[in-house]
Image (cartoon, rainbow, N blue to C red; front, side):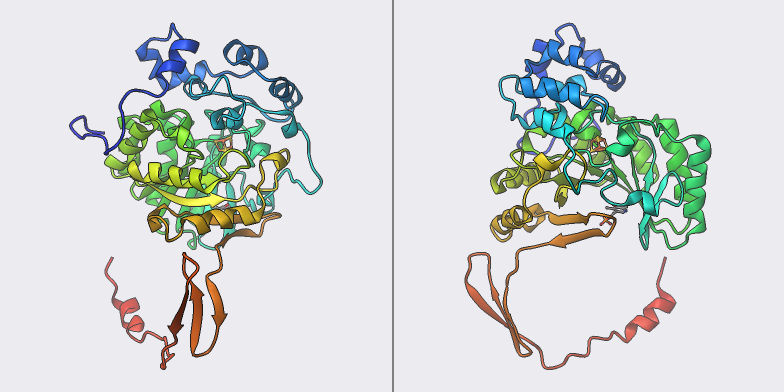
Amino acid sequence: MPSDVPPSKGFSSRPASQAGREALFPSATDAEWTDWRWQQRHAVRNLAQLEKYIPLTPDERAGVQETSSLFRVGISPYYLSLIDRDHPLCPIRMQSIPVRAEARVRPGELADPLGEDKTRPEEAIVHKYPDRVLFLALDTCSVYCRHCTRRRITKGGEAELTKEQMRRGIDYIRRHPEVRDVLISGGDPFLLTEQRLEELLAPLYDIPHVEMVRIGTRVPVCLPMRVTDSLARLLRRYAPVYVITHFNHPKEITPEAREACERLVDHGVPVENQAVLMRRLNSDARIIQELSHALLRMRVRPYYLHQMDVAEGCEHLRTPIAKGMEILQQMRGHTSGLAVPHLAVDLPGGGGKVTLQPDYVVERGAQETVFRNYKGERYVYPEPEEVDCSCPYDAVWRERRWG
Ligand SMILES: *Cc1c(COP(=O)(O)O)cnc(C)c1O
Ligand code: SF4
Protein backbone atom coordinates (compact mmCIF):
# COMPACT_ATOMS: atom_id res chain seq x y z
CA MET A 1 0.00 0.00 0.00
CA PRO A 2 1.44 3.40 -0.84
CA SER A 3 2.43 4.85 2.54
CA ASP A 4 0.26 7.97 2.20
CA VAL A 5 -2.94 5.87 2.00
CA PRO A 6 -4.59 5.49 5.40
CA PRO A 7 -6.07 2.13 6.44
CA SER A 8 -9.83 1.73 6.16
CA LYS A 9 -11.96 2.91 9.02
CA GLY A 10 -12.22 1.08 12.29
CA PHE A 11 -8.90 -0.71 12.55
CA SER A 12 -6.21 -0.31 15.14
CA SER A 13 -2.65 -0.48 13.90
CA ARG A 14 -1.25 -2.21 17.00
CA PRO A 15 -0.26 -5.68 15.81
CA ALA A 16 -2.53 -8.39 17.21
CA SER A 17 0.43 -10.73 17.41
CA GLN A 18 2.34 -8.36 19.74
CA ALA A 19 1.47 -9.97 23.08
CA GLY A 20 1.88 -13.52 21.79
CA ARG A 21 5.14 -12.60 20.15
CA GLU A 22 6.54 -11.13 23.35
CA ALA A 23 5.54 -14.23 25.28
CA LEU A 24 6.62 -16.87 22.77
CA PHE A 25 9.37 -15.35 20.63
CA PRO A 26 10.90 -12.64 22.85
CA SER A 27 14.20 -12.59 21.00
CA ALA A 28 12.74 -12.08 17.52
CA THR A 29 13.63 -8.67 16.12
CA ASP A 30 11.12 -6.59 14.16
CA ALA A 31 13.05 -7.31 11.01
CA GLU A 32 12.85 -11.04 11.64
CA TRP A 33 9.19 -11.08 12.66
CA THR A 34 8.08 -9.21 9.55
CA ASP A 35 10.22 -11.35 7.24
CA TRP A 36 8.07 -14.18 5.86
CA ARG A 37 11.09 -16.38 5.27
CA TRP A 38 12.06 -16.09 8.93
CA GLN A 39 8.47 -17.02 9.79
CA GLN A 40 8.68 -20.06 7.51
CA ARG A 41 12.01 -21.18 8.95
CA HIS A 42 10.67 -20.87 12.49
CA ALA A 43 7.35 -22.59 11.87
CA VAL A 44 6.47 -25.15 14.53
CA ARG A 45 6.47 -28.58 12.95
CA ASN A 46 6.46 -31.24 15.68
CA LEU A 47 5.26 -32.11 19.15
CA ALA A 48 8.45 -31.15 20.98
CA GLN A 49 8.45 -27.65 19.46
CA LEU A 50 4.74 -27.20 20.02
CA GLU A 51 4.96 -28.17 23.69
CA LYS A 52 7.55 -25.45 24.20
CA TYR A 53 4.99 -22.81 23.28
CA ILE A 54 1.50 -24.06 24.09
CA PRO A 55 0.32 -26.04 27.14
CA LEU A 56 -1.37 -28.87 25.22
CA THR A 57 -4.40 -30.81 26.40
CA PRO A 58 -4.07 -34.62 26.52
CA ASP A 59 -6.39 -34.77 23.48
CA GLU A 60 -4.11 -32.43 21.52
CA ARG A 61 -0.93 -34.24 22.56
CA ALA A 62 -2.38 -37.58 21.48
CA GLY A 63 -3.77 -35.90 18.36
CA VAL A 64 -0.33 -34.68 17.28
CA GLN A 65 1.11 -38.17 17.85
CA GLU A 66 -1.70 -40.13 16.22
CA THR A 67 -1.92 -37.93 13.12
CA SER A 68 1.84 -37.70 12.62
CA SER A 69 1.87 -40.26 9.81
CA LEU A 70 -1.37 -38.89 8.31
CA PHE A 71 -0.90 -35.14 7.88
CA ARG A 72 1.75 -32.55 8.59
CA VAL A 73 1.75 -30.07 11.43
CA GLY A 74 3.07 -26.61 10.56
CA ILE A 75 2.22 -23.33 12.29
CA SER A 76 3.88 -20.01 11.53
CA PRO A 77 5.10 -18.08 14.59
CA TYR A 78 2.65 -15.32 13.64
CA TYR A 79 -0.38 -17.64 13.64
CA LEU A 80 0.87 -19.41 16.77
CA SER A 81 1.09 -16.06 18.56
CA LEU A 82 -2.66 -15.56 18.08
CA ILE A 83 -3.55 -18.78 19.90
CA ASP A 84 -5.35 -18.56 23.23
CA ARG A 85 -3.04 -20.63 25.45
CA ASP A 86 -5.78 -21.06 28.05
CA HIS A 87 -8.57 -22.30 25.79
CA PRO A 88 -8.52 -25.45 23.63
CA LEU A 89 -11.56 -24.27 21.66
CA CYS A 90 -9.81 -21.11 20.47
CA PRO A 91 -10.58 -21.01 16.73
CA ILE A 92 -6.94 -20.39 15.78
CA ARG A 93 -5.92 -23.34 17.92
CA MET A 94 -8.62 -25.65 16.53
CA GLN A 95 -7.48 -24.86 13.00
CA SER A 96 -3.82 -25.57 13.62
CA ILE A 97 -3.38 -28.15 16.42
CA PRO A 98 -4.69 -31.68 15.74
CA VAL A 99 -6.92 -33.60 18.15
CA ARG A 100 -7.45 -37.36 18.32
CA ALA A 101 -10.69 -37.27 16.31
CA GLU A 102 -8.62 -36.28 13.29
CA ALA A 103 -6.86 -39.65 13.31
CA ARG A 104 -10.16 -41.53 12.97
CA VAL A 105 -11.48 -42.25 9.49
CA ARG A 106 -15.26 -42.69 9.51
CA PRO A 107 -17.21 -44.84 7.06
CA GLY A 108 -17.98 -42.84 3.94
CA GLU A 109 -15.07 -40.44 4.36
CA LEU A 110 -12.84 -40.16 1.32
CA ALA A 111 -9.15 -39.43 0.69
CA ASP A 112 -10.18 -37.51 -2.44
CA PRO A 113 -13.61 -36.23 -1.34
CA LEU A 114 -14.24 -34.13 -4.45
CA GLY A 115 -13.18 -36.81 -6.92
CA GLU A 116 -10.50 -34.46 -8.26
CA ASP A 117 -8.07 -37.18 -9.26
CA LYS A 118 -10.68 -38.55 -11.70
CA THR A 119 -10.69 -35.27 -13.63
CA ARG A 120 -6.97 -34.62 -13.59
CA PRO A 121 -5.72 -34.75 -17.18
CA GLU A 122 -2.30 -33.43 -16.12
CA GLU A 123 -0.52 -33.52 -12.77
CA ALA A 124 -1.18 -29.78 -12.38
CA ILE A 125 -4.73 -29.60 -13.73
CA VAL A 126 -8.14 -30.47 -12.32
CA HIS A 127 -10.69 -29.85 -15.08
CA LYS A 128 -14.17 -30.41 -13.71
CA TYR A 129 -16.26 -27.51 -15.00
CA PRO A 130 -16.66 -26.44 -18.63
CA ASP A 131 -14.88 -23.07 -18.68
CA ARG A 132 -12.47 -23.11 -15.76
CA VAL A 133 -9.68 -25.23 -14.35
CA LEU A 134 -7.91 -25.63 -11.07
CA PHE A 135 -4.10 -25.43 -11.35
CA LEU A 136 -2.31 -27.21 -8.48
CA ALA A 137 1.04 -25.50 -8.20
CA LEU A 138 2.67 -26.93 -5.07
CA ASP A 139 1.98 -28.93 -1.92
CA THR A 140 3.24 -26.64 0.86
CA CYS A 141 1.36 -24.18 3.09
CA SER A 142 2.24 -21.59 5.72
CA VAL A 143 -0.03 -23.35 8.22
CA TYR A 144 -1.47 -26.84 7.74
CA CYS A 145 -5.16 -26.43 8.44
CA ARG A 146 -6.67 -29.23 10.45
CA HIS A 147 -9.72 -29.01 8.20
CA CYS A 148 -7.75 -29.28 4.95
CA THR A 149 -9.68 -31.53 2.60
CA ARG A 150 -6.91 -31.60 0.04
CA ARG A 151 -4.55 -33.25 2.50
CA ARG A 152 -3.83 -36.09 0.11
CA ILE A 153 -1.76 -33.39 -1.61
CA THR A 154 -0.71 -31.14 1.27
CA LYS A 155 0.43 -34.09 3.38
CA GLY A 156 3.48 -34.08 1.16
CA GLY A 157 4.78 -36.35 -1.50
CA GLU A 158 3.59 -34.33 -4.47
CA ALA A 159 6.10 -31.51 -3.95
CA GLU A 160 6.39 -28.39 -6.00
CA LEU A 161 5.71 -28.94 -9.68
CA THR A 162 8.76 -29.48 -11.79
CA LYS A 163 9.30 -27.06 -14.66
CA GLU A 164 8.17 -29.82 -17.00
CA GLN A 165 4.90 -30.45 -15.10
CA MET A 166 4.22 -26.74 -15.01
CA ARG A 167 4.85 -26.49 -18.74
CA ARG A 168 2.49 -29.40 -19.40
CA GLY A 169 -0.20 -27.76 -17.27
CA ILE A 170 0.11 -24.50 -19.18
CA ASP A 171 0.11 -26.38 -22.50
CA TYR A 172 -3.11 -28.11 -21.51
CA ILE A 173 -4.77 -24.74 -20.97
CA ARG A 174 -3.36 -23.43 -24.24
CA ARG A 175 -4.87 -26.43 -26.08
CA HIS A 176 -8.29 -25.91 -24.46
CA PRO A 177 -9.83 -22.67 -25.75
CA GLU A 178 -12.92 -23.21 -23.59
CA VAL A 179 -10.86 -22.43 -20.46
CA ARG A 180 -11.38 -18.74 -19.64
CA ASP A 181 -10.75 -18.83 -15.87
CA VAL A 182 -7.73 -20.41 -14.16
CA LEU A 183 -7.80 -20.95 -10.42
CA ILE A 184 -4.28 -21.42 -9.06
CA SER A 185 -4.16 -23.30 -5.79
CA GLY A 186 -2.24 -26.07 -4.11
CA GLY A 187 -0.88 -25.88 -1.41
CA ASP A 188 -0.41 -22.16 -1.17
CA PRO A 189 0.76 -20.36 -4.35
CA PHE A 190 2.03 -17.35 -2.38
CA LEU A 191 4.78 -19.56 -0.97
CA LEU A 192 6.28 -19.72 -4.45
CA THR A 193 9.12 -17.34 -5.11
CA GLU A 194 8.08 -14.31 -7.11
CA GLN A 195 10.11 -15.66 -9.98
CA ARG A 196 8.24 -18.99 -9.99
CA LEU A 197 4.90 -17.22 -9.65
CA GLU A 198 5.75 -15.03 -12.60
CA GLU A 199 6.78 -18.09 -14.62
CA LEU A 200 3.20 -19.23 -14.16
CA LEU A 201 1.33 -15.92 -14.52
CA ALA A 202 3.20 -14.62 -17.55
CA PRO A 203 2.41 -17.52 -19.92
CA LEU A 204 -1.21 -17.62 -18.71
CA TYR A 205 -1.49 -13.90 -19.43
CA ASP A 206 -0.25 -14.58 -22.97
CA ILE A 207 -2.97 -17.14 -23.71
CA PRO A 208 -5.70 -15.09 -25.40
CA HIS A 209 -8.63 -17.21 -24.21
CA VAL A 210 -7.62 -17.03 -20.52
CA GLU A 211 -9.67 -14.05 -19.37
CA MET A 212 -8.90 -14.13 -15.68
CA VAL A 213 -6.82 -15.81 -13.01
CA ARG A 214 -7.76 -16.49 -9.41
CA ILE A 215 -5.20 -17.37 -6.74
CA GLY A 216 -6.38 -19.30 -3.69
CA THR A 217 -4.20 -18.55 -0.68
CA ARG A 218 -4.23 -18.57 3.10
CA VAL A 219 -1.21 -16.30 3.31
CA PRO A 220 -3.18 -13.16 4.27
CA VAL A 221 -4.54 -15.17 7.23
CA CYS A 222 -1.51 -17.15 8.36
CA LEU A 223 1.53 -15.31 7.00
CA PRO A 224 0.41 -11.76 6.17
CA MET A 225 3.98 -10.41 6.04
CA ARG A 226 4.36 -12.35 2.76
CA VAL A 227 2.08 -9.82 1.05
CA THR A 228 4.77 -7.32 0.14
CA ASP A 229 4.50 -4.37 -2.23
CA SER A 230 6.56 -6.31 -4.67
CA LEU A 231 4.16 -9.29 -4.62
CA ALA A 232 1.15 -6.99 -5.03
CA ARG A 233 2.78 -5.18 -7.96
CA LEU A 234 3.58 -8.50 -9.59
CA LEU A 235 -0.08 -9.57 -9.40
CA ARG A 236 -1.29 -6.24 -10.74
CA ARG A 237 0.91 -6.61 -13.82
CA TYR A 238 -1.13 -9.67 -14.83
CA ALA A 239 -4.59 -8.22 -14.12
CA PRO A 240 -7.27 -9.38 -13.86
CA VAL A 241 -5.94 -11.49 -11.00
CA TYR A 242 -8.35 -12.10 -8.12
CA VAL A 243 -7.06 -13.28 -4.77
CA ILE A 244 -9.33 -15.74 -2.97
CA THR A 245 -8.39 -15.99 0.65
CA HIS A 246 -9.62 -18.12 3.52
CA PHE A 247 -10.59 -16.40 6.79
CA ASN A 248 -12.84 -18.57 8.96
CA HIS A 249 -13.20 -16.56 12.14
CA PRO A 250 -13.11 -12.84 13.01
CA LYS A 251 -10.22 -13.54 15.41
CA GLU A 252 -8.06 -14.02 12.30
CA ILE A 253 -8.80 -10.52 11.05
CA THR A 254 -5.93 -8.76 12.76
CA PRO A 255 -4.33 -5.42 11.87
CA GLU A 256 -1.58 -7.46 10.18
CA ALA A 257 -4.10 -9.38 8.05
CA ARG A 258 -5.96 -6.18 7.28
CA GLU A 259 -2.76 -4.56 6.05
CA ALA A 260 -2.06 -7.53 3.75
CA CYS A 261 -5.55 -7.48 2.24
CA GLU A 262 -5.64 -3.71 1.85
CA ARG A 263 -2.24 -3.76 0.20
CA LEU A 264 -3.60 -6.11 -2.46
CA VAL A 265 -6.78 -4.08 -2.94
CA ASP A 266 -4.86 -0.80 -3.09
CA HIS A 267 -2.74 -2.25 -5.86
CA GLY A 268 -5.86 -3.09 -7.84
CA VAL A 269 -6.11 -6.74 -6.89
CA PRO A 270 -9.64 -7.64 -5.72
CA VAL A 271 -9.81 -9.98 -2.74
CA GLU A 272 -12.64 -12.43 -2.00
CA ASN A 273 -13.03 -14.80 0.92
CA GLN A 274 -14.01 -18.45 1.10
CA ALA A 275 -14.81 -19.65 4.61
CA VAL A 276 -15.45 -23.18 5.76
CA LEU A 277 -18.26 -23.78 8.19
CA MET A 278 -16.88 -25.77 11.13
CA ARG A 279 -18.69 -27.21 14.11
CA ARG A 280 -17.98 -25.37 17.35
CA LEU A 281 -15.48 -23.12 15.61
CA ASN A 282 -17.67 -20.76 13.60
CA SER A 283 -21.02 -22.61 13.37
CA ASP A 284 -23.07 -19.68 14.56
CA ALA A 285 -24.80 -16.86 12.67
CA ARG A 286 -23.38 -14.25 15.02
CA ILE A 287 -19.82 -15.34 14.27
CA ILE A 288 -20.30 -15.60 10.50
CA GLN A 289 -21.93 -12.18 10.49
CA GLU A 290 -19.08 -10.62 12.47
CA LEU A 291 -16.62 -12.32 10.10
CA SER A 292 -18.42 -10.89 7.07
CA HIS A 293 -18.58 -7.41 8.53
CA ALA A 294 -14.88 -7.47 9.42
CA LEU A 295 -14.05 -8.67 5.89
CA LEU A 296 -16.07 -5.89 4.27
CA ARG A 297 -14.41 -3.29 6.50
CA MET A 298 -11.10 -4.23 4.91
CA ARG A 299 -12.69 -4.37 1.43
CA VAL A 300 -12.72 -8.15 1.13
CA ARG A 301 -15.93 -9.66 -0.25
CA PRO A 302 -17.41 -12.79 1.35
CA TYR A 303 -17.76 -15.25 -1.54
CA TYR A 304 -18.43 -18.81 -0.39
CA LEU A 305 -19.31 -20.37 2.94
CA HIS A 306 -18.39 -24.01 2.37
CA GLN A 307 -20.12 -26.94 3.90
CA MET A 308 -17.27 -29.19 5.13
CA ASP A 309 -16.26 -31.84 2.60
CA VAL A 310 -16.56 -35.50 3.51
CA ALA A 311 -12.80 -35.89 3.92
CA GLU A 312 -10.89 -38.35 6.06
CA GLY A 313 -10.53 -37.20 9.66
CA CYS A 314 -12.89 -34.22 9.39
CA GLU A 315 -16.13 -35.66 10.74
CA HIS A 316 -15.75 -33.88 14.08
CA LEU A 317 -15.78 -30.53 12.27
CA ARG A 318 -18.79 -31.17 10.04
CA THR A 319 -22.09 -29.39 10.68
CA PRO A 320 -25.53 -30.63 9.67
CA ILE A 321 -26.60 -29.15 6.31
CA ALA A 322 -29.48 -27.39 8.06
CA LYS A 323 -27.02 -25.34 10.15
CA GLY A 324 -25.62 -23.46 7.15
CA MET A 325 -29.11 -22.68 5.85
CA GLU A 326 -30.16 -21.45 9.27
CA ILE A 327 -27.12 -19.14 9.37
CA LEU A 328 -27.96 -17.67 5.96
CA GLN A 329 -31.55 -17.20 6.99
CA GLN A 330 -30.41 -15.22 10.01
CA MET A 331 -28.30 -12.98 7.77
CA ARG A 332 -30.29 -12.41 4.55
CA GLY A 333 -32.32 -9.22 4.92
CA HIS A 334 -30.98 -8.59 8.39
CA THR A 335 -27.64 -7.27 7.17
CA SER A 336 -25.95 -5.98 3.97
CA GLY A 337 -26.48 -8.35 1.07
CA LEU A 338 -22.75 -8.01 0.37
CA ALA A 339 -22.10 -9.69 3.72
CA VAL A 340 -24.06 -12.83 2.85
CA PRO A 341 -21.87 -15.53 1.24
CA HIS A 342 -23.10 -18.31 -1.04
CA LEU A 343 -23.51 -21.52 0.93
CA ALA A 344 -21.78 -24.19 -1.16
CA VAL A 345 -21.78 -27.95 -0.89
CA ASP A 346 -19.11 -29.60 -3.03
CA LEU A 347 -20.72 -32.95 -3.73
CA PRO A 348 -18.79 -36.02 -2.56
CA GLY A 349 -17.33 -38.06 -5.39
CA GLY A 350 -16.90 -35.18 -7.84
CA GLY A 351 -20.36 -33.80 -8.58
CA GLY A 352 -19.12 -30.25 -8.21
CA LYS A 353 -20.46 -27.37 -6.15
CA VAL A 354 -24.12 -26.64 -5.59
CA THR A 355 -25.44 -23.78 -3.51
CA LEU A 356 -28.18 -23.82 -0.94
CA GLN A 357 -30.36 -21.12 0.42
CA PRO A 358 -33.32 -20.92 2.72
CA ASP A 359 -36.56 -21.36 0.80
CA TYR A 360 -38.60 -18.16 0.67
CA VAL A 361 -41.23 -19.49 -1.74
CA VAL A 362 -44.45 -20.47 -0.03
CA GLU A 363 -46.55 -21.23 -3.13
CA ARG A 364 -45.75 -21.29 -6.83
CA GLY A 365 -48.61 -20.61 -9.27
CA ALA A 366 -48.96 -19.65 -12.95
CA GLN A 367 -50.42 -16.24 -12.04
CA GLU A 368 -48.49 -15.46 -8.92
CA THR A 369 -45.81 -16.64 -6.53
CA VAL A 370 -46.27 -16.34 -2.80
CA PHE A 371 -43.17 -15.58 -0.74
CA ARG A 372 -42.33 -15.09 2.86
CA ASN A 373 -39.80 -12.34 3.53
CA TYR A 374 -36.89 -12.34 6.00
CA LYS A 375 -39.29 -11.49 8.82
CA GLY A 376 -41.61 -14.36 7.93
CA GLU A 377 -44.37 -12.12 6.45
CA ARG A 378 -46.27 -13.23 3.31
CA TYR A 379 -45.97 -11.28 0.04
CA VAL A 380 -47.41 -11.96 -3.40
CA TYR A 381 -45.49 -11.44 -6.63
CA PRO A 382 -47.75 -11.36 -9.72
CA GLU A 383 -46.49 -12.95 -12.96
CA PRO A 384 -46.43 -10.77 -16.12
CA GLU A 385 -48.82 -11.39 -19.03
CA GLU A 386 -46.11 -11.56 -21.71
CA VAL A 387 -43.60 -14.36 -21.29
CA ASP A 388 -41.43 -14.14 -24.42
CA CYS A 389 -37.92 -13.57 -22.98
CA SER A 390 -35.84 -13.80 -26.16
CA CYS A 391 -33.44 -10.88 -26.88
CA PRO A 392 -33.35 -10.11 -30.62
CA TYR A 393 -30.62 -7.46 -30.35
CA ASP A 394 -28.24 -10.15 -29.14
CA ALA A 395 -27.63 -11.30 -32.70
CA VAL A 396 -26.49 -7.78 -33.56
CA TRP A 397 -24.37 -7.43 -30.45
CA ARG A 398 -22.61 -10.75 -30.95
CA GLU A 399 -21.53 -9.58 -34.42
CA ARG A 400 -20.33 -6.14 -33.36
CA ARG A 401 -19.20 -6.24 -29.74
CA TRP A 402 -16.15 -4.12 -28.94
CA GLY A 403 -13.06 -5.63 -27.38
C1 LIG B 1 -14.43 -24.66 -6.74
C2 LIG B 1 -13.77 -25.07 -7.97
C3 LIG B 1 -13.67 -24.21 -9.06
C4 LIG B 1 -14.22 -22.80 -9.03
O1 LIG B 1 -15.59 -22.79 -8.82
P1 LIG B 1 -16.39 -21.42 -8.79
O2 LIG B 1 -17.77 -21.81 -8.40
O3 LIG B 1 -16.29 -20.84 -10.17
O4 LIG B 1 -15.73 -20.52 -7.79
C5 LIG B 1 -13.07 -24.67 -10.20
N1 LIG B 1 -12.57 -25.92 -10.28
C6 LIG B 1 -12.66 -26.78 -9.26
C7 LIG B 1 -12.13 -28.16 -9.43
C8 LIG B 1 -13.26 -26.39 -8.06
O5 LIG B 1 -13.31 -27.23 -7.02
S1 SF4 C 1 -3.89 -23.46 3.29
FE1 SF4 C 1 -5.45 -24.53 2.07
S2 SF4 C 1 -4.32 -26.22 1.07
FE2 SF4 C 1 -3.07 -25.48 2.78
S3 SF4 C 1 -3.58 -26.76 4.52
FE3 SF4 C 1 -4.90 -24.94 4.63
S4 SF4 C 1 -6.79 -25.54 3.56
FE4 SF4 C 1 -5.18 -27.04 2.98
